[in-house]
Length: 146
Image (cartoon, rainbow, N blue to C red):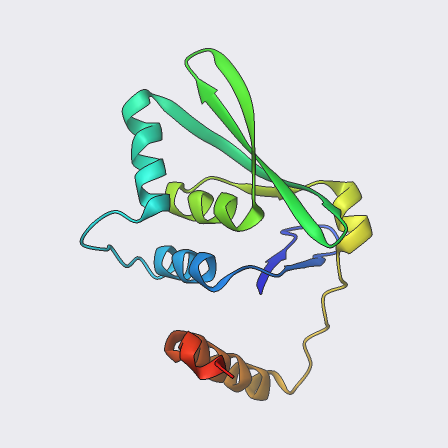
């Protein structure tokens, strides 16, 4: 699950289910891990740079029938264009390129969750988060085979 949070306002959370490869790609970029050969998202960022295009912003736009949609807002020279994308791919590109991520207000109203208030059990919550991170780093698809 990818969990995005508003940087201002009500600081609502936007939970989006994503696949393991996309989660791993986002995690790799966040951790600053540089693969020996470019992965798909790294390649796309390189192609943008080589063609002079810039990723101006990523916008998570809507949810329809439990499927989230996003847009890549690009600038090529003086032209602006928008390309439809899966939110997980869009975020993977944004993390690699330092591009801001937005969500529409309508989407946050429809799918946003209120942020929980942090209480004195903050240490326990941090421990749970650390355990979850450890699980994610070591999970193997074979662990779920039936």
